[in-house]
Image (tube, rainbow, N blue to C red; front, side, top):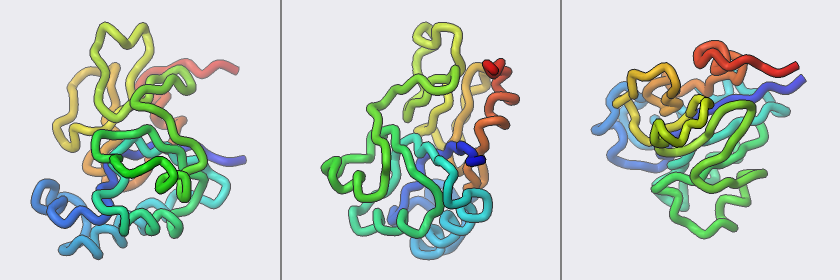
Length: 165
C-alpha cells in the first residue's frame, strides 16, 4: 500500500534560503538541496504520493533535483512557481491551482481565510516558520516539518479529521 505525504516551500536552488531559514540543513545551496533530498527519501518510497504545496524551486536549473526524490509528485502552485507548466510536468504527475480540496482538507500554498474553510482544515505553506496558532491550519513548510514530508494519517490526527471508511 502506498502512503500520501505533504510538504511545502522546498525552495530548491534558492541561494539565500539559509539566511532566511537557518534551521534548514546545509551551509550552501548545494548542501541544502542534498539535505532536503535525503530527508524526503528517508520516508518516501517509490509508490508513495507527495503533495508539494508550492514554491518548489527558485531556479529552473534546480528542478531536475526532483528526479532523485522518490514517489509520485503532485504540485499545488505557489507564488514562486513561475516557470511554464511544461517545465513542472517533467517532474509532477499532477499540477493544481492554488487551492484544492483533498481527503476532507483544503490544500493550498498560502493559508486561506477562515471564512473560506467551510468546516474543513487547511494544509498550507508560504509562511515558513510564522505558523498560525489555530487548530484548523497546518503549516507544511520545510521549517515546520524539519524537511520531512508529513504523512496523511498524521495530518488527519493532528487536525482532528474524521476519516471516512
